[in-house]
Image (cartoon, rainbow, N blue to C red):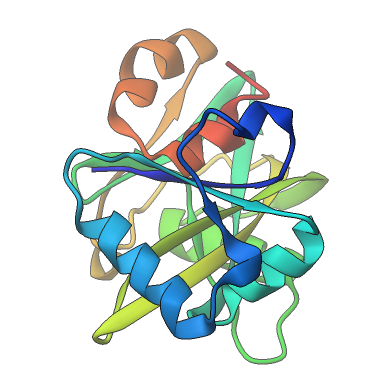
Length: 195
């Protein structure tokens, strides 16, 4: 089940909502609140409020192992490239190697996961964040996303050791009909520019 966490400033619209004030939580209390939220089956939204968004985001990040990743939304001839991994449509992405920048990592990961070449970054997209189980605790992954184009003409090759079963091109209509119903909220956020 996908869940959302919102961090927002305290204001009048928060008065009648259920929320937790992050400003008063210690690191261990924040992690406890997250674990409780993660295991509840009837709650899909956790709202954290604060007086200072920047400070609250830094505080929220501290209890988690922080991982950086990068990936791409690749376009060619008005079609967009998706991978099918773990029974969901996804975009190619992966962790940054030591000393590697996000743009370099995004191109490398797309090439490795899809067997694609001749990628050109056209612009940066908004980053996404997601939390997942990691070695008995939790990791918070920040993924840098880039819009890309390609002149690749060859066959696409899924990286099976990364559990990728298929690599396919989709039109905007196909994305609406086939991808959006079977993808992750973070991927929906990335592809909102094209749907």
